[in-house]
Image (tube, rainbow, N blue to C red; front, side, top):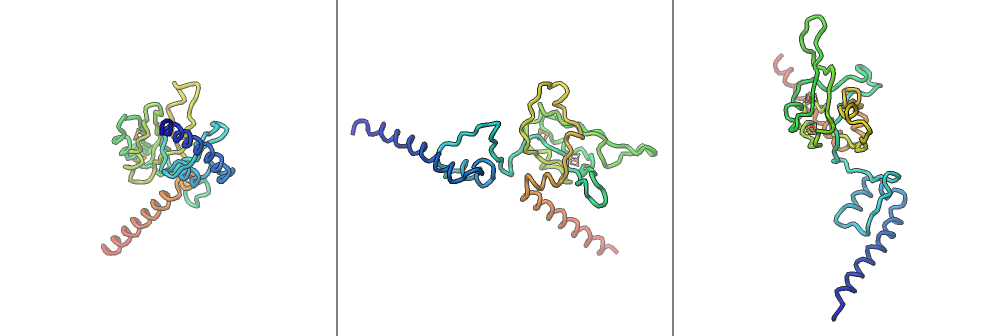
Amino acid sequence: MYGFGILKGLGVTLRHLVNSYVDDIKWGVSRYETTEAFEARQGPNARGVVTIQYPEEKMAVPERFRFIPFLVINDADHPEAPGDDWCTSCGICAKVCPPQCIWIERTNDPETGRPVPQPKNFYIDIDICMNCGYCAEFCPFDAIKMDHDYELASYDRTTRHVFDKDVLSKPVSYWQEIAPTRAEEERLGREAKEAAKGKKKKRKK
Ligand code: SF4
Ligand code: SF4
């Protein structure tokens, strides 16, 4: 029938319009704020059209989302070493970083002058970082992770876009909060490694 295609197209548009409101009501206040809602509304079975009133409303990002890296440190209430760096300043992340935007300043023992496995400072030029995540993938100590914070705009790119150790450091509880599955997998992996090391030592004795 002549014009049937137009009617079909209008029907699709109308269905999307109605579904947008049905889905908004279904998800209620959590419609942009939970990972479950995010996955349902951005997935292949999504219904309707989602418009977010950013910055008043923000959509939750999935666990695998990655932006500028951050450095993991112990929590402030750690019983033995509160706030200690996990980074050993081994330099692997700086070596694998494709655009070479990581600089690490090693700590030296004041008496012997020998390097100590701890960064004195750590810089990332966030204008150069391309969010590839290689640094986090290659770090053997789980000490650098990809952040979810994407609101980094500022009026001064000359000084505020080179992040130093103070800006980059965040407690491990923050990583556990934004990426609970990965953080748990890594914790189990570290425990397994420690257990294997312990067994090796016993065998040597
Ligand atoms: S973040 Fe990881 S890879 Fe980079 S220097 Fe520190 S320990 Fe090494
Ligand atoms: S995310 Fe990629 S580009 Fe950014 S610091 Fe890490 S390795 Fe370099």
